[in-house]
Amino acid sequence: MRKVQVAVLGATGMIGQRFVQLLEGHPYFEIGGLYASERSEGKTLGEVLRVKGVRFQDETLAMRIEALEPKAIARRCRLAFSGLPTEVAKDAEAALADAGVAVFSNAASHRMRADVPLLIPEVNPDHLELARSQATFPQGGFIVTNANCSTTGLAVPLKAVHAAFGLKACYVSTYQAVSGAGYPGVPSLDILGNVVPFIRNEEEKMEEEIHKMLGTYKGGRVEPAAFDMVASCARVPVLDGHLESVVLKLGKEAAAAEVVEALETFRPEPQALGLPTAPLRPIIVRGEEDRPQPIADALAGEPERARGMAVSVGRVRERKGYIKLWVLSHNTLRGGAGGSVLNAELAKVKRLL
Image 1 (cartoon, rainbow, N blue to C red):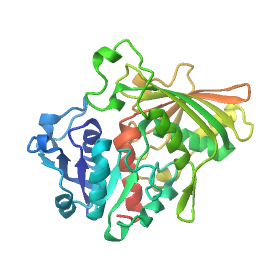
Image 2 (spheres, helix red, strand yellow):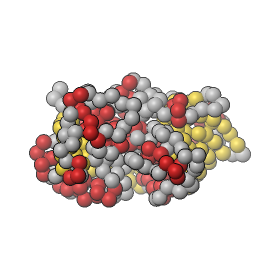
Image 3 (cartoon, rainbow, N blue to C red):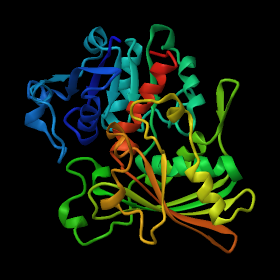
Image 4 (tube, helix red, strand yellow):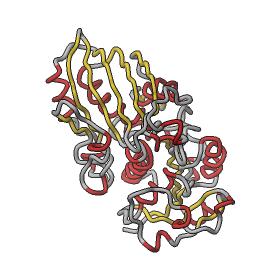
């Protein structure tokens, strides 16, 4: 099978380099170019490498960064993975779609557009059809976004619970890793031995995005979900892995054991299709009293290509008519580059590429 040539946008950043990691040896996609701002033009990936603990192939490290020019990218690549900052992504991604490129974005710029899928394949694969309503679709260009990193980790188990029991309310407190702030991220003197109880726009993103993703696709549009959603977000001195404390009011009563069963038996479309980056078990329920933990569970997921793509859930319990649980997900893999790659895999199988 001939591989699709892809561009990586924002290749000097944390998410951009996670894209490169996931695209090495990918069965569907091949890196056709690395792109970033003009100040990095001409440098090799090895010279700007920021991801720690990952071994890249020598030929990948030798690839040179190019300036982001939409028409030039369109001549070489059918698809672009975007790890661009939000303020840059809005215009750059639109220009690429105008040029006939399919853009799979990690940025927030287009997430809430009515005609743009805010996609997690395990949660709302049918929303991918929104891409067909975009004005640029007949020329081959469209934009698909993945959710905010903290929203993604929550949405997967929430989908399983919502499908089984319905939802009246979700109250979540997040404890988010510093890598979620990009690179160099939070200044070390602000975060070491500290917790910062504020992440700009994070709570608003979670509350808005979850309703779109768990909404119903019908007649070419998404009707948002109607349950109450309240988020409180903090930055903690952890490198990778967003931990979330979740309290749920279900649509119908269920015991903790029934909720665990719904989580453990959840097998959505990406697993049925065998997509390369889909973990065999999208949700892993931990039975230990002190799990999940970032250092132990952030890289959960099998096979090897899907490491960091499973969501870990633990401490599922009942309390006064509510279900309480903890959720952990890898923020730059499941909640970042891995989510976009999985979106593109679904689009290819659905013949949008």
